Length: 591
Image (cartoon, rainbow, N blue to C red):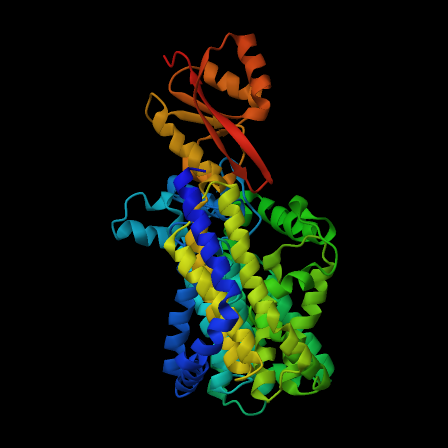
């Protein structure tokens, strides 16, 4: 690390430590004087006055949590870059029916997310943004909009169970969750899937909670929302949302000992509407792929994840329970308050429905072999609403919850320390935003802990949500600066040192982000094949992992290839978990 950067890092690190250690004494005087708890209580009161105010505040807070880093964070490995590359190839081929990743079909998910990303990129092109199809930001816009919409829809869904004040609090708590913050910033299916889940569950919950009270017009409106959400969700990620909703309805009906509340759901027109949404593309892709899409997406991708740890993502039961406390941070800490209340009042209709949404599918996910953190995200809103429900009904924090309030400052401090370690380890750079908002997040998390024992649980949760927002601003201002994590960007930047323009490229690093950045025509080869590639002559470049340099050199010697080392790129391939060096090689005689 350059000496100036190291001195700057040392300065920021010491400042954060000093702020943390001295915070307790500082906050004792400053918090009452500033009146943070009182001001946030006033914000909750203000939001409770009308839906318009609540919605406006939720949008502002969601964007505060989500915007930092969404433009500057490089393409990530692997799913985001795979989705973006497949969408980019649709523009290159002008084929918006088939889904391909280079020359291979990509039939893991339906077409929905690719169309949304294509619409975003297409709109950017129409607005005059040059090379919009090469800018990952435009592929992320659907996720940003879906995550923001999900914050509004959890508010709408919560209104089926809660008063406006507590529905707003549920929206704030969910917007601040670390899991949603990640998904809002990457170009994958999960934020959009969550949006459809909340629309379907919000409508279904109203059929359950207001049975016999809905007018015929209200029934048709809610049924339209429900079945549209189901249809769109199938186009995004297949049967995931229908499966969760079906499990919710089934368990709720069994515990209710009646399914009569489902009758107004308009099943026949609803299913026809779902077919109208999904059938045109499903038929088109069946014809185009000769049935290959269904074999790959259902037989391999979906069922394969149930029986084996796909792509090395297997984990034992209990994995999601362990992750839950971070995924839903900061609201997760109050699960210790809501869980005993939910168990004691499990016969209550609101509690029964929310548990039917949360528990059965969660247990299934714990049993399924393949596990990734985002799989349980469609279930997290039920946990947030249960927490808000307990608060609305006056459940007080017991000594276990009060003692556990330390979890808030511990998480923020550990993440900040982890970021400092990452910057030191991977030659990154700090910025003022990291320092200011990092210290602010730690201070606010301590304030939330203090408020939990004093001013009340509602305001403590609101302060903790602000701490999470500050934490995300700090983290996502710093992550793009740790350039060693983004090997693909470094390799593509190295092309500027190549003595010819627009070279043909081959690589032994087979990462999706490199394909997205370098172009669809980049060839994924091994070391010997890379030597053969350069031997063809002309303007060519090969990115060769230093670990296979000897194999490359042997093959080059065999075929009489003379080559130049233009540059050596170093970095950390986080997708595989190892540091590496990559050689940038060209033919000695490009002609």
